[in-house]
Image 1: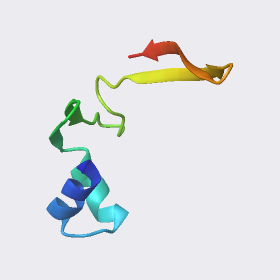
Image 2: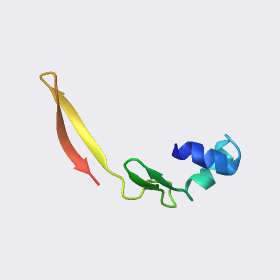
Image 3: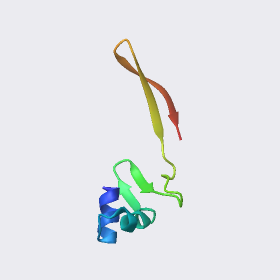
Image 4: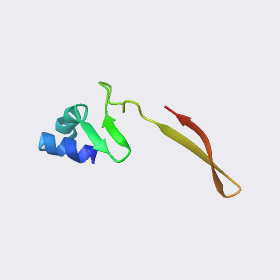
Length: 64
């Protein structure tokens, strides 16, 4: 939905036009606000790493 919002604001599906809009977005999503820094990385993002052992999913780490 964030990409769609950026494309709407740029009135284009051309990455050269919508990527500058993407970094300006503060999108209120289900998991919270989605905001990007000047490098295009998500601010305050969280990554959860999992592995599978014996057919069961196990959480390895949560990286913020």
